[in-house]
Image (cartoon, rainbow, N blue to C red; front, side, top):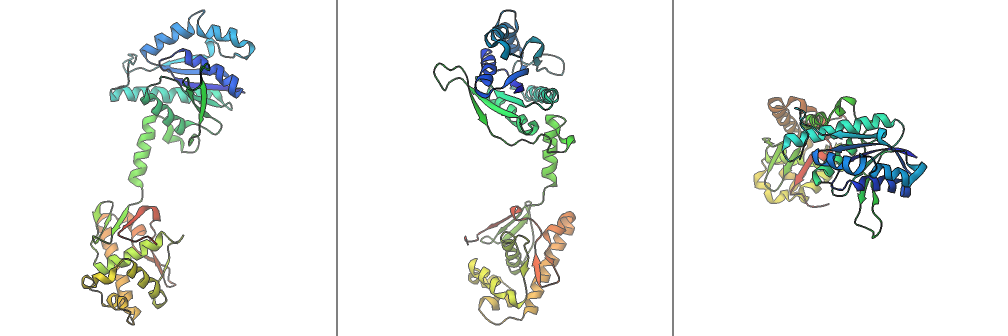
Length: 342
C-alpha cells in the first residue's frame, strides 16, 4: 500500500529513513511521498545525512530495491520561517511557535491534497521536542481523515531493532467540520473560542450554601424557588426529556427530593407555606404550589431579560400544558452541589 508521510524532523536524521523502512517491513506500507518540516539545524542535518549524494536516501534505495518508491523528487522539505523569511531556530517564543504551527498546518494540508485517496501517515520521530510532538498530534486530530494513521516511532524498545512503530488511535476530525474552520491553525483556535462563547450557559446550584448562578452571575431566587428550580434541574439529569410531573400526583416525588436534600432542617428559611406543609406531611392544596412554580418562572424570566435574553428558552421553566414542567438546558450544563448521591 502506498502512503504519504508527514513528519517534523527531530534530532536524529537517520530515524526518518529507519521509519520509512519500518513502515514497509512491519506494515507493508511504501512511502511514495514524504513531507518533512525542519528548522535551521534540522535543515542542515537533513541535507548532510539524507539528501546529499551518496548519503541516507541513496543508501536506502539501494537497500530496499524496488520497494523504495521515495526519491529526491518525492522528498518535500518544508522549512519553517518567520514572516520576514528568516528560518526558525527554535519555537520557544510564542510568535515563533505560531510560525511553526502554521508551517506544519500548511504542510499537512498539502500532503493530504497530494495523497488523494492514499492514506497519510503522521510520524512522531525519536528525539522530537515535546512542543513539536504536541502540535503534531493536535494537527493530526484536526486534519486527519478516516484511514490516516499516527505512529510513534520509538528507537528505545528493542535491542538491535532501530525503530519500532506504535500506532496511536486518536480522534480524527478531517472532513467532519465545516471547511471555514480548518483554513489555518489560528482559524481553528478562533473557531473553538467562538464556539465557547456560543456555548449554552452553565448553571450551578449550591443547596448547602443556598445560591444559584448562571455562568458566574448570581440569580436572586427565594429559598423555596431555589428548591423548586433545583428539583427541576435534578430531574433534568435523570430523564431524557426532563419533564417533571406537577400537581397533586407529583407531590410524592417532590417530597422525596426535599427530604433527600435535608430541606426539613431549613424550614425556618422557607417562607412558602405550602412547601413547609408538604415537608411536615400535611395536606397541601396544589393551587398554592402552583403559585410557587409560577413565581419561579417569573423570577427566571426577569433575570434573563436583564442579563441574557437569548438564554430564556433554556433557563426559564417550560410547561407542556399537560401537567409537566422542565428546564430545557441540557443536563451536562447543570451542576448541583450539596445533593446526596441517589
